[in-house]
Structure formats: structure tokens, C-alpha cells
Image (tube, rainbow, N blue to C red; front, side, top):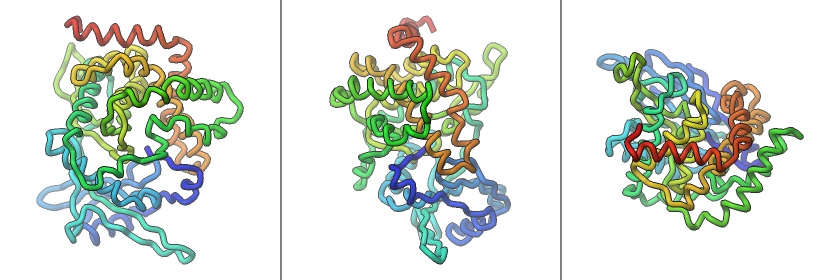
Length: 370
């Protein structure tokens, strides 16, 4: 997911290419005849599932970035290079197929008469699997997702690129350090109990997290390991139920410079959304993450509030963006369908009780009980 400042959102234009237009772009820019093309759900970009009849059917994803993202070619270049770096490191990420001219991206300018709008195009290899949101989530799978998140952050310590500074994204709304910026969007909630919950989280974040940021360990974050950005495939049977393994990691659009504890907090939040026992889920994700990167005492102490803050980010920005793009409401409100209930449960249960669940679960893995 991506978010912008209010003045930027007015300038942001989500692409609206038809399937016929997208098919023509694949042919003219990438040199492929298209056998079949289908739109895929998206937040503020546009994605298409592309079938190419070349020595047997091959599959790709055409991504068309919105006008605001398309202005930051350096950032998109780094995102693409990170995906390719991780794929070479053995992670299940897509590769970027070059244009006919050998570039990773192509800038498409459309003259609408009153103005010219530009969109960056990329073509990714299609990854197999189903979103984790569509399968039964087990403790083992949660552990593996947490472990994968840590392994990815650890591997990115080795990533080098002359434009890597573009990941320091300033006021990027989806970076957890920028939770206080939600005050600019909270009006979208109107006067409500939900708004009161978010205001409580925002105040605690300013009081308890902002002053601690310098004590957290820095890294590059994927920043959006939600239930639709992690793909899984069946890997046999376990106790009569299907077992799954991660087969794909999608959507590097929210990458930014952050902290290890941000990655695990974001992952916990989204995996809570996919789990029947949402509070327990956090402990399994934490155990997996800490099997690679154990958190410090200060990082652990911030985890509850960071998870609550990510819920707040997602819920506020969904409400705000729905006002801008009501036609995309079904996709934009995926988190909101159950997210408010999860946030309320977190806050009512309280930090101490939630930490006891998470930390005891993680401890049981280290003790070999799970």
C-alpha cells in the first residue's frame, strides 16, 4: 500500500488503462504478444495478470505505477533491484523483465488534452501460489513468515546501490516512524469511538516511541507483509490438514529505511488479521523473527505500541483513501472489515497481558516446547 500527503493525493492519479490498452503496452514496450490479460486488485497503482503464448504459456504481471510514484524513478529503480537481489539470494521474489530496449522500466506519457500524465511500467514474472489470506493459517506458517521477514531484512544488509538513499523517504506515511502524520488524515473517521482509539495510540506513540527511535537497530524494511503480499503453496499434509510453505513475496512499493522492530510489528499486525486466535498469532511470528534476529529489550518493549500503530495507519488511511477513490472501496476496506475489532481487542486486553502472550509463546519455541 502507498500513501501520500493531502496535497500530493490531489496530484496522484491512479492509472485506468483498459485491458486492451494494457495488452497493447505489453506488446509495444516488452515485445510480447498477449494471449490473455486480466486486471488484479491494487491500492493506488494498476496491475494486470498477463499470459504470453511463447513455447508454452508464460505468465507475467504488468505493473503501472500511479502518477506520483512514477515521478520517483530512482526509488522504483531501487525497488526493482532489491527484488532481483533477493531472488538471487534465494528468496521467492519476482524478477523484472526488461523492455525491448533493455531497461527495467518504461515511462508512458498520456496527453489528455489539458495535461500530460506519465506512468512508469514494469513487467514482473508471475509467482505461483495463493495469498496467505485465503488459506488456514497455522502456528507453523506464522513462525515461517516471521522467520522469512527477518531473513529478508538480514540479507538486505548486503544490498548496495548508488541510489539506495531514495529509501530514506522522509514523510512517507507508511513508514512507522511517521505515525504522528496520521493527524492530517484522522478527520476521515469523523467523531467516533474508532477515532478515540486512534488518538489514544497516536498520543502514546509521540510520548513513548519517538524518543526511543535512536535506540532501535536500523535496516531496510519491506514494510507491507500483509495477507495478500505473501503467497503460499501446499507442501503436503500435516495431521490431516494441508501444510503450506511460502512461495512468493509481492509488492515492494512500501520499502523504506526503517528498523528491525518495524518489520516484525508490521508482520505481526497483518498476520493477526489472518488468524483465528489473533493475539496468539503475534507470539508465533515473533518466535520466527527472533530465531534470526532476537530483539533487544527496548525493541520488545515497543512492540505492542508499534503493532497498535500499524493498525491505526492502515485503518485511518483506508478511510481517507476511500473518500478519494470510492469506486475502489471493496479493496481499500479489506483491513477495516475486521481491523477495528482487532485494534479494540488489543487496547482492551492491555499491553502487559498481550506481551505475556507473545513473549511466553516465543519463549516456548526457544525451550523446544513448540
